[in-house]
Image 1 (cartoon, helix red, strand yellow):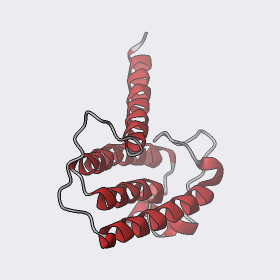
Image 2: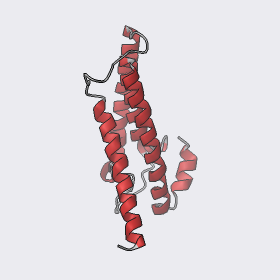
Image 3: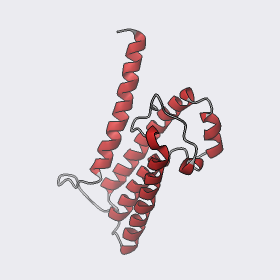
Amino acid sequence: MSKFQLKNFFKAAYDLMLVSLQFIIISLHFFQWEFIPQKQIIQASPFSYLLGILIIIIAFITMLVSIKDLGRNLSPFPRPKNNSNLVTKGIYRFTCHPMYYSLIFISIGVFIIKLSIYYLFLTISLALIIKFKITLEEKYLMNKFKNYLLYKNEVKV
């Protein structure tokens, strides 16, 4: 295997690792493990429950809109598809990564409902994984689309 092939293999493995970790952390939001303490930081209230639900609903709607706006360009991987286009219309006029931010806000909403250390850990872990994924995706986008940097500077978020 040449150096070039080995480098591409490790890039693909890193992409796959980030996507896998993202999906694992998201799925952990739906399971309550008996052996993991679910100790609450503070007592949840009806207000925190309603606030969490509201954040989840808004983030879920934002995610659906971003999926619609991405269309055939949608991929779970940070590397854009070969035949993809740079999407700058719809919700992408306001933010570069609405789907990723939606995932983080859904996790924040779940944390606000549960107010436990476990969900705080999941939210922080998901935010870190998504930060790494965004950084990598932006490198790919800058290499593929010459006008990405201009778009990113115009949108800022």
